[in-house]
Every structure is written in C-alpha cells, then in structure tokens.
Image 1: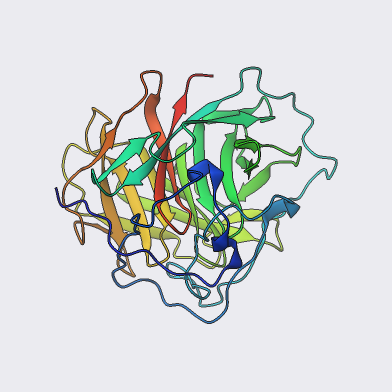
Image 2 (image 1 turned 90 degrees about the vertical axis):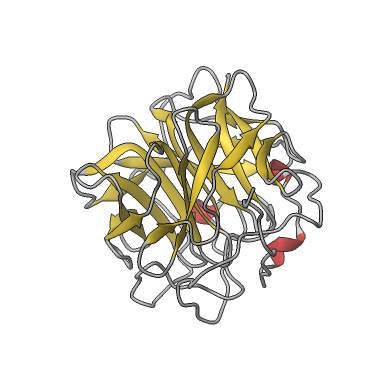
Length: 325
C-alpha cells in the first residue's frame, strides 16, 4: 500500500516540546508527517496565538510551519490572529448538552500505513460543557501551534462554538464563551458539515458548495470583526480535482501538516478508508502523493461513521469519529 507518511516536519514553536495527551502520551520517533508539494508561500516568524484567551498549556507540536505561513490564496499578510468573540461577553447562557459527546481517536500508524484507533493515543475523549444548542454531528478540529481545538456548529445560527483541549483531563472543555459568528458565507455553502485548519497565522474554515460539490467555500477569522468572514484574506472558493468516483463526501476533513494543506474524504460508502488530496497552491488535487485509499483500522463498534475530523499536532496526524456518549 502506497499510503506511507514521509518525513516529520520541524517547527520553531516551543509548544512542540510538550506531549499532547489527546494524541497519545507517547509518540514513537518513527511517526512521520506528510510530504508537502508546492505549499503556499511562507514568511518569517511563528505564531503563539491562543484563541479566546485560553489558559490551557501547550499541548503538542504546532499545526504550523517552521516560520509563519501565508495562506491558500491569501493576500500575503498572514497574521498571528488569535480568535476572540463578539456579542455578550458574559458567555453562553445555554445549558450544557445532557449527554456528553465522546470522540474516538485514531492516530497514524506507520507500520500498518493506516489510521489505527487507540494506537498510542487516548482511545476516547469526552466533550464537556458544550452548550445545548451545539451540534456534535457538525464538528471540526485544528491545532494552532499552542492549543488543540474543537469546533461545533451552533444549531439555528451561522456560528460555531470553540472548545479547548485540557491535557490534564484528556477532555475538550467549553469555557462558557459565546459562539463565534460566520459572516458573508453564501447561501450555497453547505452547512451540514465543515472543516478547519490553522495555517500558521490564521484560523480557516471551509464549507462544501451545494452548486459545485467539488468546490470549497473558504473564510478566515477576522479579529476586527470577531468572526469568520467568507473570503477574508483567502481565495473565496477552491476547487477539488481528481477525486475518484465512489468517494463519499458525507465525511471530510482538512489539516495542515506543516508542509502543505491536506483534504480527506471517505473513500467509499463503507466509511472505513479515506482519500487524501494535496493543496498545490491553487487547488486540492487527489493523487499527488497517495493514490490509494488510506485505511481506518480497529474502529470501535460504537463509533459513528457519519463524519470525521482531523488535525496534525506537529508530530503525527490523527482522525476522530464520534463515539457513544
């Protein structure tokens, strides 16, 4: 199987010296990252942005480059913009979700060339304190160089809630902050799922297009607006090319491995493997490095395979499915 993950990246972020419990208390030195092909241009400097004033400690290697990266078609002003919120600063008043969601965690296993559940990782991670109007079925994740973050769509609103990973408790925790608005995203952006990544300077959010299923609708966090804004410092729409027939876009995710940006989609309706796409500077293209499905192994029986989320912590990529509460 040609799904081997090439060399690990380096990063200047001091956060890379900390272990990320949510991605495994011990990561073997053999775990490697993905090769980058024609990554977006980079500029000097790093990022220590901590969204929404999180006081959690560094939780792993940065999902950033060795130096600050500009973005997919950005205007070259990639900024160290920590996410903050607007609205009622007293925080969310919604009651927490009654049944705490769980995340089943798979880490990349270079020996099997697959995402293996419970491989050198916390098998199940709780989501604590998410407001009752947060939708766990619509989630995305990223690592911003300091913190590992989970985002849940707010039901009945164009907004997302942010939850921080607590490495001591191995849980994602909502601190009561209000949701973060999504601004100017078009009506043809499919809100049924979304993906996110951190490019080394900005927090990025993606929807699929209803009109063009193989097209991403992109926005980034604007600190002045306190919102994710469509087209802000971004290519507003990015094509996805070469995806094999039979792939299932009911589940998809994105990450930044420090060399380039990656997009993943279920390879079939069985939801037991994924296809990888690589950002080539203009579009996400299938088969630039891996042209075969990448397997998901040791999937828990109670795992919800409807969708998945992914992130890269600077050492290894990970994939998450929702588990039984």
